[in-house]
Image (cartoon, rainbow, N blue to C red):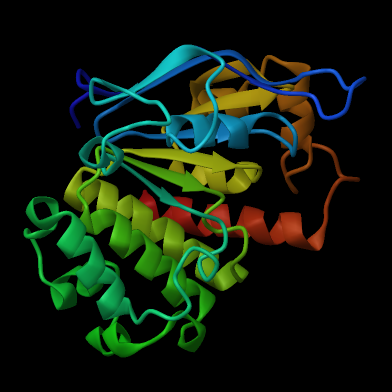
Amino acid sequence: MSQHHRVLEVDRLSVIHRARGRRGLPVVACDEVSLSIAQGEIVGVVGESGSGKTSLAMAVAGLGRITSGTATVSGVQIGRRLPRESRAEIQVVFQDPHGSLDPRQTVQRGLKELRRIHPRRTSWIGDEELLAKVGLDPLLLGRLPHQMSGGQAQRISIARALLLRPSLLLADEPTSALDVSVQAQILRLLLSLREEEGLTILFISHDLAVVRAICDRVHVMLRGKVVEEGVTSEVFDRPQHEYTKRLLAAIPGHSTPDSTGDKAGASASVGATVAREAS
């Protein structure tokens, strides 16, 4: 895997949301965050709700504000007024697969629209072959989103992103709305696409077990700052920051015996399943 070509460079990026009301204080969602991702890497950003990870993701995708600093994808600086061709370089897979698809549009019509807008980027593959790449039957081409399961809809979202041959896939909590059995399948799909297509992924999540299973490196965010970063296994096995230790303690079997729960236990088993099959 090539490590010299940097796909994403985020340099001291800050996002400050304007206050609402006369007395409200501005909210610093991201505070001089820096990170980079090489071609073919999967890099995670983790943190609890309010840590700033979603503001960072939206800024990188060109969908949110950047107050200061820069985000560059394949040499193109990200901003709100990106040309259409440059915007295609970054594709986002969102948390809610049904919410990100047009409810009135069959899968085939959606793909046809993307091909019309980006004829050169999308001519490399046919619809049936594209669906096969994400493990779906071509019969789904005629279906509407409500006629698909959550896992099928998420695979369609991934297929639509893949069709545009993006430099960067931004996966924003892509498995958290899915059943546990389906979560592992989607993670395995992303890992296989990284191997087969050289996909580069920025993976946003609150779920450390999932991040451990899929990410090469990880950045831990707290109140808008990256408080710890490094190779995923090293950060998880030898955490330095108290916040990282606290997050890890909530994973069953990792540390504290009083922090287990059904959902956490399920996600930990998802991570273990994926890690076992990937090794």
